Length: 209
Image (cartoon, rainbow, N blue to C red; front, side, top):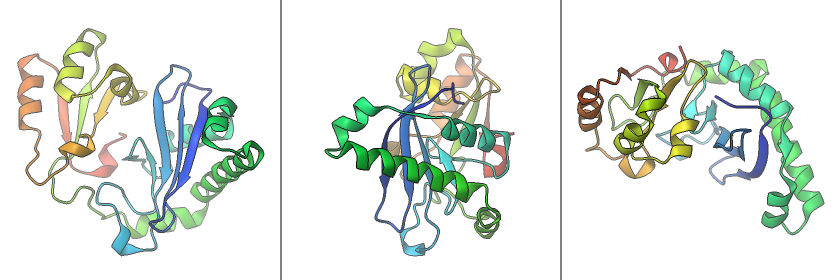
C-alpha cells in the first residue's frame, strides 16, 4: 500500500466536526491521503466515508488489520516535506509543530481502545448509500496498466496508489461518478472483454482480505 519512507506535504482539519487529513507522497512518488473521520455530528456524516474510521485514499481500513499497522508505522516514521509546507504556510515553525501534533493525535487515537469501540458502533454504516457494489477488487498485471487507466478513468499515479500489498487494485469510483445512476456494468464489461480478473466488494470488511 505504501512504500516507506513517506513524505508529508500537507494536512487539514475539516469543519464537519473534526475529520482530519494527512496528505503526502511515498518513496515511489505516489500521492496519498490518510484521514480519520469525525463521528460525533451525524448530520455531517459523509456517505462516502465511515464515521470514526481510519481511511487510506478514502478507503476505510479494517480495524486492527495489517493495513492499519502499516499506515501507523509509516506515520510514525514519516518525513515532513518542509519545502512543500513552506509553500503552504507563512509560519513554518507553527505549521511543522501543527502537522507533528496532528500525526501524533491520529496515531494515539487509532491505537486506543476508544477507537475500537467507535468502530464497533458504526460497523453497519453503509458507504455510498445510493450505490450498490461501490468497490471492485481487480487482479493487477503490469501489462494491463494502459488498459486499466482507460477503463477506470485514472492516470498512472492514481492507478498505482490503488495497488495493495497483495498486488490487487482496490477501485472506488472518483467523486464525479458517485451518483444514484452510476454502476459498474460498463467497467465489468470491459474487464471481462480483456480477461482481467475482478470481484465486487459489498462488505467493507472484505476490502482488505
